[in-house]
Image 1 (cartoon, rainbow, N blue to C red):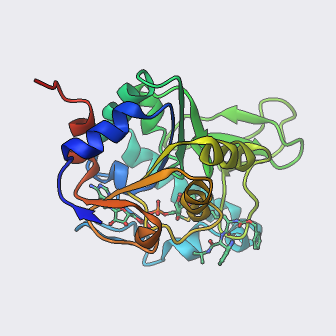
Image 2: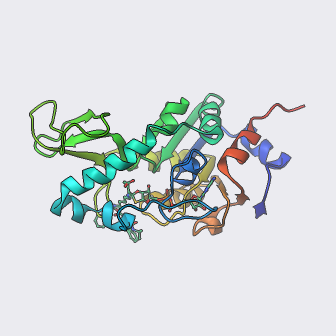
Amino acid sequence: MIRTEVTDDLISIFDAARSVAVLTGAGVSAESGVPTFRGGGGTEVWTWRGKHITELSSAELMATDPKLVWEWFDYRRGMLTTIAPNPGHFALAQWERRFEDFTLITQNIDDLHRSAGSLNLLELHGNIWRARCLRCASTFEARDTPLEQNPPLCLVCGGPARPDVVLFGEMLPEGVFERAEEAAARADLFFVIGTSAVVYPAAGLPIIARQAGAKVIEVNPERTDISIYADVTLLGRAGDILPQFIKERG
Ligand code: BJW
């Protein structure tokens, strides 16, 4: 079913839910000015030195040219220092306070959900402000941009570090996807917001939720590969649609 605004029946489903899980993607940050990976909804797409994301954010490039990977992430970190959460991020932080069980699962590494106040957050693809030591595997916050040194050195053992993010062809951090699967399976309402839903295993979560009996609501300006699994696709921008679920009701 396609809708373009939040109707009373959707508000009733939202109000009656006890366990809610939400999967977000790049589209939720688009209204803050963060480019997306594959476009859609009239968004700008990340490009850097003429290369595409699949080349730049790949395990292969990390193995052959880690300095270049850091330069790509340093460029993005610089851009993020000028960017703030938008009404979509803030609405999700408010949603969390309304439900006894609420899990926000994000594919985004930009930290904007946390900046907006979300607490129960699962970051499937890591965080751009964290580094991970290639020698001892310690993770630590690394916020300097431009980088003081490339690669940054581990605060524990002095070894070279890499961005603590999940590149194409890499495994997700241990335990995080399992927790996301559990949240999807116990949800009675599952939202899938601002993602093209082509990258796995994240794109499998709405299907898990649906198979376990949840209602699935998609929010995106365009239909996606996951729309056929959604009970409702709300066609629109996250920053316009998400606050409608919690606006004052007369
Ligand atoms: C708006 C909006 C507005 C715009 N409001 N919405 C099964 C089948 C086939 C392949 C695979 C498979 N399982 C695994 C794979 C391989 C691969 C994969 O999925 N490939 C597919 C592309 C085919 N997966 C992996 O490699 C994963 N690892 C893994 O599975 O490990 C096991 C394994 C290892 C080795 C071999 C095989 C298996 C890891 C995936 C990691 C993804 N990493 C990236 C980069 C992170 C770091 C970085 O940022 O650089 O994560 S890729 C990139 O895509 C990024 C994103 O999180 C991710 C998803 O993108 P997202 O968020 O959906 O963004 P877009 O741009 O695609 O969509 C934006 C949407 O927003 C659009 O729909 C717009 O319409 C919408 N929109 N404005 C609301 N205002």
